[in-house]
Image (spheres, rainbow, N blue to C red):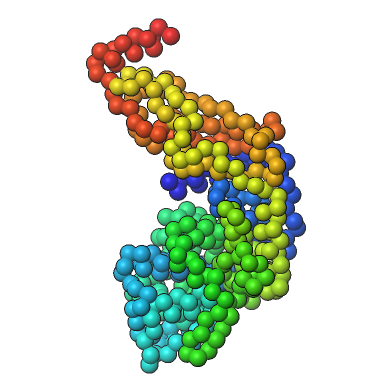
Length: 374
């Protein structure tokens, strides 16, 4: 399923180059990207595949793997874990855990997500992976599974390392996966503050105070990475995710992320073309137990289009002919080609909604004759 939507994103990006789309604002960041979670489309980007230092945005993957472990029930929110000396001595931002006091997994998650605690990140890496080194290998395997092609991790915190890097595109992909796969646990990112060990620390994502539609997700900063932010906002049924990397200050990263989110909501709208398993077309099948197969999409086909232009979308179906049985459910059987205002807008693989088995001997013989006579 993820491969299907990755292909949609790629095809949309290629088609978008051939037409005039709303012009995004000029963004004061080394690299940046704006993503529509419903359609899977990148609405605007600059240097999105440039490798950069992710800083504490690394903790998105630490959180993702921790959420996965919670879902598998290999750890529990109320489970208390010991604090190693390595976690206790972690440099950088901290939640101030203490080796003398075991800490609950739930507190570690809030300490990492809200307070950006490096000590919490190391402690989570140790409880989930056994060691931070082991956990880093898990991070890289998960990055590969999620399709993060330009990402490599060496630690759970985001502390600088020449072999620790990612891109705006990969980090937004990871953020969107977290929102999709763990919506309940993702909600921790909206907490504005967390108190541990009698120390109250605010969430560094100031968009939570400035925009009520923003519900996460993470900030990052080192001297070499600059100020980074991934923010997500939901307005009505639409959710956008924006990333800015390498800005000059906290104020700039907040301002530029807000501008990108506002641009996406104001310049684009989402249009649902087809529902899940809705028949786009019915295709002729040869040598099958049935003569036709319904073709459509495994999930709702939702597109982001410039505001007010949804009615200008035109679709045409190109099928693979002759289509011979057997046809398996989920098999690509055609391509839906879209134009917007007469210009190519995208091509989307169409799949068989149901399957068609092979006909008996005489049915295959009859269709072979008919195909030969065509």
